[in-house]
Image (tube, rainbow, N blue to C red; front, side):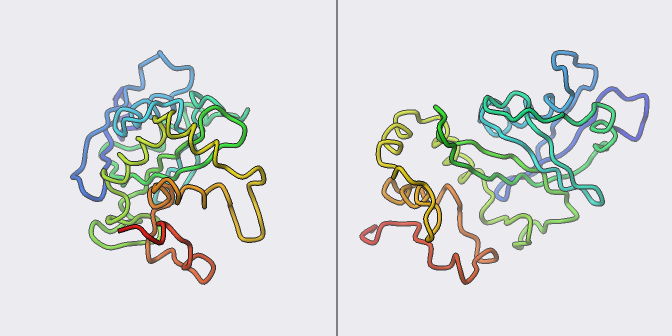
Length: 213
């Protein structure tokens, strides 16, 4: 919450790699949600254009106290205890700056094939023009976010993907479902590659079809 204990609002700033900062104003007196963390998730839904029910959770990487927020609006949420309102409010200060990082997931046995996490990475842990461990300005962009939003909201595409998925998801060579996304030319958006994260085991992962022009 704001350093002014009497303040009922906190403004934080968020950005993507190809955009300047945007203000997100959290009104702690808003009683439309049982848990105050939902106020943040609904603001993140507005910012990303992705309905809150598709946002799985959020990793808040603060300076000294990183923590997870579970989205109680998420349609397939686990029965986990939300962060208490008081704890949440004291962990956001007026003017806090964050970079937005998104991560996609494929869901087993659910109507919606994709979910997404929307993480907030403190300015202490990212560089605006250089790739760092928690955030990459070249990867975490509005362009990538829009592609991921299209995947999440395109039920027709998801139906085609489901029809092509192998019955057994995991093999000794990894996640066969994710590999199937190559055939729909969206693998590169599901887990966008950053050279910093390439390892011996992942550097040969194919994101495109061999004949892609």
